[in-house]
Image 1: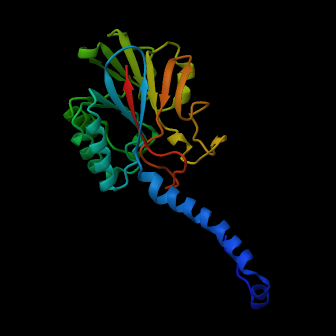
Image 2 (image 1 turned 90 degrees about the horizontal axis):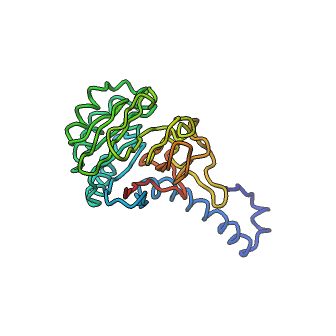
Length: 261
């Protein structure tokens, strides 16, 4: 915060007091710059292990692509360097239809098969399912809106939640991994999965030490970021790649998750 001082006030301020006021202003400015220009694009890698298997997949979510091609290219390079067997995306690729072609082109650059499901903004954007289907299929993966896909080499079935539920899915592999957007849905699935991957929360984007996320969207519940045991099975909530509403992140860098299952 900055103050306007008149000449009389200035004459009463000592050098020590002036330096003290400056010292208070600098951390706030530095934090603001960090939250806007550094943390928003500083990808971090989180590694989790779910069971004794040796299948390595990458999970990312909530891209919210708005034309930052350099950042998108860095995301692709980072995922490729991790050399996953396949990649899972849990929704909100874009908010606006005009950005979809470029965002989907970056998805197609990922060298591993990419499997994805829609988030609320993908539905709202007006991008057709056919466009998502073509792009994700081109990677060797698929767009799993209310569909599933079996990964035969690892005996894993990826179950994708779109607008429907999961009760109609008949198990087709030894292990089932559910891809969904809203973490709170894990409480009402009515069945158990070996692993659930979700996004939507962005981790809150701004997280205070010992407090956690300041603001969260609806559909998150108690599962704002990280690993949880839920009625539907083990759940990991990814903090997302992009930002929504405010272009800031603090104590909550964008995240790519490596899962061993």
